[in-house]
Image (cartoon, rainbow, N blue to C red; front, top):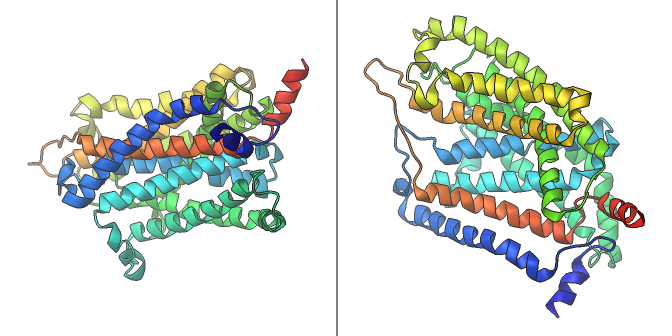
Length: 419
């Protein structure tokens, strides 16, 4: 009975794992979800003393990972921009998957922010009493609005399920919604541009933190533009990486090779541009910005260990320049292993960049009598973010099973069946 009901929701022409095996796959994620829910309950009931953050270390694991998943989730808005505005029609094969990834990343980030603030019932204060002089206000407004856009973009994907298509009203609604999707793609691009930039900008304006402070253009520090560019660069890489992981997990081809090539080429070009401007920004910071505030740049790296010069080299050269070259050179990009390696390195690079701005910025002393601050998250912090990971895996798994995330899957399956 359950198997027949499950099969009735699966699209025709595609194969899915037996229902029992799917439950075995979902069970560990459900257990992690339950553990994370318990940790979140402890934090909301008892307060943030369950974490290892304090008045000096106000940004911890949650904010670092929030910034990382928001950057990786940029594939949703940027893929939509490439498809609907620049007419990169081959990306239609991954737009549904990109929307689900973006929805998971942004809804997970908003959830963990609600826990981090500690008073989610007062979240409406941000909208009713906005601090118009804070970049966090712009971030809050843009992320909330963009999450709404992602939910709207998810609706036609859901309505295409064959159990809903038999209702004419659903078909008409889905058709009309699809016709105006270019409008939502443009709105999403605009919102993402500002909140990605403002996330970088809020570090760049910290005059009391010379490690993060940057000069810029008009009211925007250079970190505003670097965060936007880095998110645009790794978004296509993350879409390619998740698609490849889905193919490995399901043992099926989901998209054609040209889709990987397009994602890799676009990501490589933008990543190379990002590395170029990141190098310019770093040189300006080393030779002008930091010395003018009484901190020669080499002093920031005198502590060694996790915060030595190796981290700057790794971020720019190892996880920036090398993946850009792997994704740009057609001969290397044509080899799937090198393409996925480049995409994974690019994603690690932007994650490391967010770690530097979130964790390293707060760890470094700003006064002669200050000492290096050390921080290690509590188990509740790990578990709460594990909740977001498990939630994302479950949403993506159920979406893949019952919705059409990869429109080329059926065609590729028929081609392989004829061989």
